[in-house]
Length: 77
Image (cartoon, rainbow, N blue to C red; front, side, top):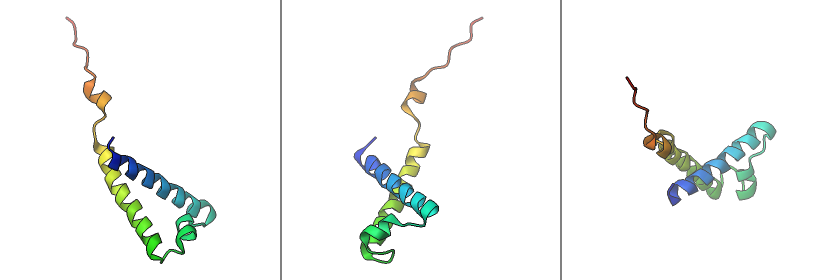
């Protein structure tokens, strides 16, 4: 996993935690920390989380290394 993918994964986890807080407690942590949903810094964070989610879509369709290295046994006669 590259550094960009790791950063994207961390940002995606932050976004998931924020959405969980919104869903369960109606509390937007990003807005609370950075000055409301309409502040420029909050919008940048929301944008970065969205881009990170798109980057992680690539991980969803990337074949896993262990799947590529396993071989199926040959049938014996």
